[in-house]
Every structure is written in structure tokens, then in C-alpha cells.
Image 1: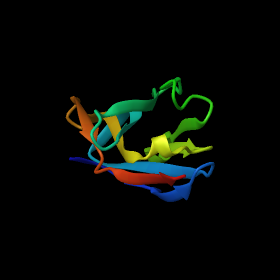
Image 2 (image 1 turned 60 degrees about the horizontal axis):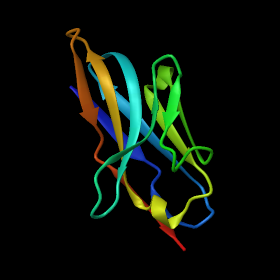
Image 3 (image 1 turned 120 degrees about the vertical axis):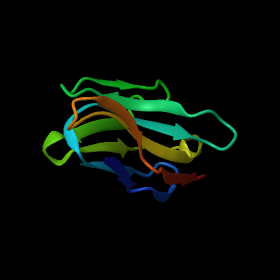
Image 4 (image 1 turned 90 degrees about the horizontal axis):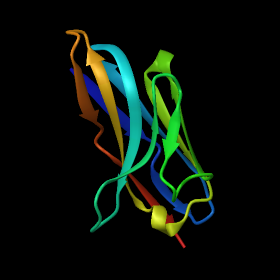
Length: 120
């Protein structure tokens, strides 16, 4: 049906930057909200940033002013620009989206996750 594929994770030193991408493909009619979540070892998954189809954004307080979420609707892709990374940003980052498929129904989809590791 629909696949979300993340890329861009890796190892970076504190203060560095990474850009995550998540491309959606499959039986897509429209994509509504697109979000980035993260889960650190031993912690619950948390919402990092979200963007609506109209471009409105929201951020977790811990990443505001450091991370920027954006989307390219023509490419069905959402991005997360992460600047001034800190060791506490280390986690598996997951893309999530609400997608209306060609049947007209909306479903929730998750990507497989991409590891971000920030060394001190």
C-alpha cells in the first residue's frame, strides 16, 4: 500500500548537523500530517516535530530553534534539518504520516527508523 523510507541518519559530533529525509510511495491519494518521532534506549517514543499539509509546524520544546521540519508535496517527502545536535538527541528517528490512499480511506503509516548518534 504505502511505504515510508527514511534516510540521512548517522554519527555526528555534538554541535554538528544532520538532515533526515522520509519519502512516501505507494497508493497515495493525498498526504496529510507528516511527523518525526524519536525513541532513545529505555525511553518512550516522543514527537519531535510535525507539519500539516498546509505547512503549519510544531516542535517539541527540546528541539525548538535547533530543528526545522519541512516538506515537498510534489515529492511526497518530509525533511528534518537538525542543527546544533546534542548527545541527548541520540535516538532512532521515525517518520510517521497520515495518508489517504486511493480507496479514499486515511491510514497511519510508520517508517522503519534511522539511527542518529551524537557523540560528546
